[in-house]
Image (cartoon, rainbow, N blue to C red; front, side, top):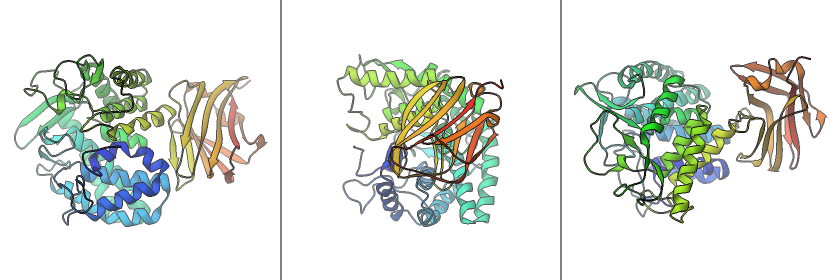
Length: 451
């Protein structure tokens, strides 16, 4: 894997999902290394250029909420309470820094020029990229504060989240998509559309944080991005060859105002493209998600480099965000604290088979319809898996009242469990923790009709 330095925080934000699942100790070591170089004012370091002792810079405003979200994801997937407590002072200092940048008092951070992952691409005021990240980080912060009993910080984040959501909508929503930026103090706006304009909601979906933005607006934004940012590769487009095929560029200006020349806005970043595909899947646009992933894959096949994804350099690791396409299509949920595993299949819903993994083991998940019954099955292949509950996302195909005709078995033997449906999700709670052994099978099924 490569990046611009030995470790780059804003790239890791996209690419470290499989690392957190497969190698949690390595992931937490990386986060501790980054935290060690936090500035007293809360700013997080960008990357380590050839040494782990001297980061290159601390100026990027998106790094603070990105760090907070990464810690929450690590905690959610590992259940490491000591790690959360260790990182909590770093998180509160980081988010406090972004709060202090809010000069227009709209409860959202203010960008000042080229100060995000997009490097030399300047944005000013309230931006869709940083502000959506910030809102998601507040939502995660509320949960972390509750776990740690920090009621003061919890109340502060709740206030900022509630008011920040309203500002995000009033300042950036144009009825079709979220525009890139609006600077209230300067009286200016950037009416372009950013492919990653709802990146915060993407991370919220991965971590099961709920909606930080109106779902219909997020869906409209991402559908608009498909229309505007999906372009044929051409001469001069960064990071591609002219005849590579289809690319999803970082930004587009539907109503004019495109910057002169070429820049980060006019080309694709593969890690952002895969993030975008995953976002579409979470929004129920599986058709578009598959199209995006296929287009990107075919582009690299055309250049005979399917495993060499190019951004700042070759074999870049931001594209490991492709793992989240799998998470979105299977609707994977893992809460190590509650020992809760869940799925909401969004592709081949009645004949679904996919791989899943946690820090302690891996297996296969199946969703199918057979013999008038809806069946969800977990085949545990290796490692350890202890479950207190199993959750299933519900849809019309699941039946009208599945809990009435529920059957739960472990290796074919009935298990004591109770089912409850709430907010389009069924939760199967086991009377006793289910300790799945290698090669064992958990099956949940119910009749599709009341007959």
